[in-house]
Image 1 (tube, rainbow, N blue to C red):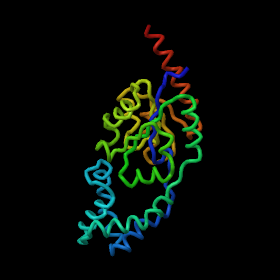
Image 2 (image 1 turned 135 degrees about the horizontal axis):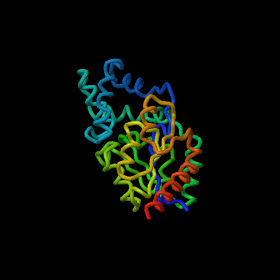
Image 3 (image 1 turned 180 degrees about the vertical axis):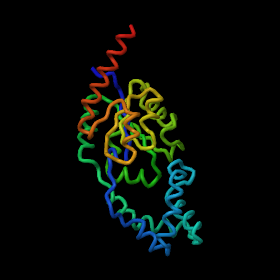
Image 4 (image 1 turned 30 degrees about the vertical axis):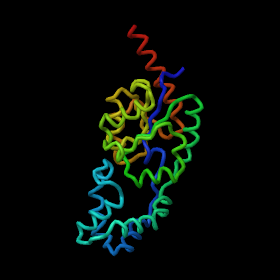
Length: 236
């Protein structure tokens, strides 16, 4: 029997992938009369503040970044443009084909599941549009809790809501933002899904196990559980 009672997942580049060529920002810029090359860098600078809930969402983020380039827009103008083009943003993301089978399998095994994501309001909207919320007992989005991974609070929010300890929980992600190290610091086991991304090399040092894809996760959990059980027996 596994020693794990809960599993926490990252979202982007773990369960969901971005596809190239999304026209959302180009189309929003055109609607609002913004120069894309001048406005988008100002928008990108507000990334962390939006993920952490300091900037309260995509409408305010677009408004503030437009203002930084000398264009003053009303919230209603921006909201209308976002709503008009949001379907194209959603279309720019796809659920990994192994995600749903894995989530179903883990739930059938009796594990509680949490999502722990550095994400703004529109990322949460994408999550819902992709139909993933039904598979999770708990969702912890950074813009809601105002903490970014790898801060311990965001992981502890998940374990508290799941009703499990950090040591009886595993974290699974692509390793960006040192999320695996943050998980380990609250006692979680960490599994890297190695997507061969720029941060993957450093993430390997923070992983208890490295796997190539989501299909390998159940075996990885079994292996880590056996190693943990053997370690505990040796302490007695």
